[in-house]
Amino acid sequence: MNIRDLEYLVALDELRNFRKASERCHVTQPTLSGQLRKLEEHLGVLLVERTKRKVILTPVGKEVVRRARMILQEVEQIEEISVSFKDPMQGKLRIGLIPTLGPYLLPFMIPAMIQEYPRLQLFLYEEQTHILLNKLNNAELDAIVLALPVSNNGFYEIELFDEPFLLALPRGHELSIKESVSLSDLSEEKILLLEDGHCLRDQALEVCMMAGATENPEFQGTSLETLRHMVSAGMGVTLMPYFSVYPNSGSNPPLSYLHFEDPVPSRKIGLLFRESSQRKEGFMSISETIRNSLPDSTNT
Image (cartoon, rainbow, N blue to C red; front, side, top):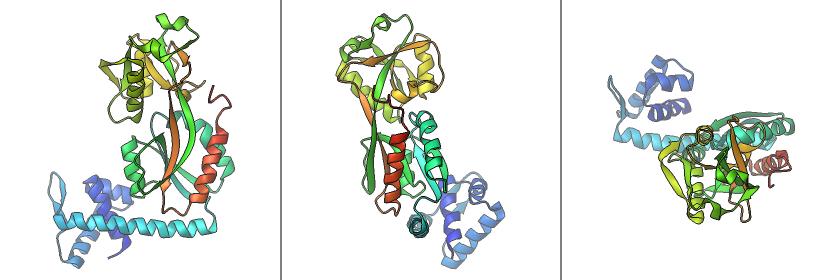
């Protein structure tokens, strides 16, 4: 039994497909299948039920996978220790971001990181919050950037910045003549929101409750760009995070954006990493780099 065998088994458990698992592990399908059979022979138990339609792990297979993940995470930590001992800001770094932030923050963040940490190999991933947290917990990601608060048992949290919301509304809307709006101006509005699973949906619902607004029940968007076009088409109004509205961010359909008067609704953005990570000092430095990369007008 070796580490590669455990990687094959974990990949098969996650993908439930021999071809996809072999592609992830960069081996041929016969190689992966053959090594797993050897592992079963070595352990003397059946780990995987092989059928034409699907892959099923046996009860003992599920328990082996659970232990294998723990072992692989420890191996990852050993490798991370050796890298960080030499230079915490070199080698592979896997960062996850939520979709309502990633496309708009990265144009500021990445050039600064490349300049500041030229020895880092950056790998970027966009997923919803619950997926990012799971991947961070399983050591599939090194750090994640997302909206706070989250359940952070076992994670270290660094607050990065507050991102204000703006009101997006169709041109010609009765509120568009105002220079700014208050929450009370939304009391009669039906707000367009993202679908379930996006943390921004929950944050926008909180604002709706404070303002006395309601959700438009007929539409739910899959992305901020979808919401932007729905507003432009006159389907309603919505809340947009600041960086998605910043010049040159996303698409530019014809619509208006208004700032809120105090108290300005906003979301807090932070960076999370595992408390056991050996790169704490490096992540503190990265957090400062991200803050310094932001435009001066962030909080206007």
